[in-house]
Image (cartoon, rainbow, N blue to C red):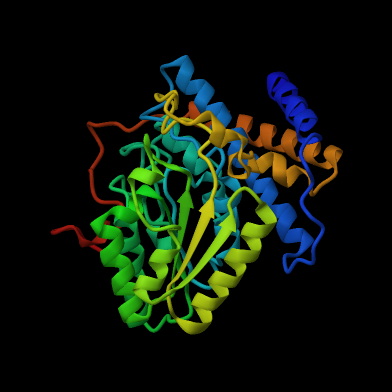
Length: 352
């Protein structure tokens, strides 16, 4: 905890050197700005702790992929969706803040990373492949672009069930927009008129491949026009701008029943995973506006002491969750039935 507070103090000192966001009229309430920022802080705190455990060795199951640099873009999307309206959020590897803002319990990712059998996947799957489909959180698929198809299918199923007011959203990276899965799913959503929101985190690299080797259009949002859907571009490092844009996109999807695409320009502030040192990243990109740390940018909206209090609370929450999960048993191969979590009732011969 003490180390975390020292890091926080350093972070706050650095943030004072940041240029505060421009004071312009905003459609985002101060409460929504505050609550989303707190999810960002919780996500950063948790991932920093998970990364430390991973580097120490032994306790983390699977790889570690951080959302550092993407917290504002992801958190804003999760915060603009509504579980009570039956919305769907298909998060990817850098969507910790979005998942938490949408309502994923903090213990879910902690248990998944530590292999607890009490977790949402019972300790049987990779830590990032977790989800609660019945609650609108489909498990992530590593084949990037495929989750767009899953969310599109879920939206079509909801329509057939007479649930036409819900919105489905998913995040992808710039590289995933070049996959066939992305094209097929977005094209289907456009043709069928499904309320899909695709958040494209343009973090400058598809693993180690720079954007100028990925696509030839001037901006990824240009692709929206080709599908006949609405496109938006936003500064992915600015929480308020992200909240304003996603509020508009989600409302449009809900009202019109048509797909929306939001492209956020930002920079992945870590390697592809903790196994990657990101030595291929052009240092000049870190000096551009898209290279800003979204935590620092958002901190300028609040009082420093208030931020310190929230970070202390996040440190406490994370410490308690990790302590709990560390004392829970892992899966027992000898007694595990190995049934699909979302379709257990469909297993042949099983009584309902």
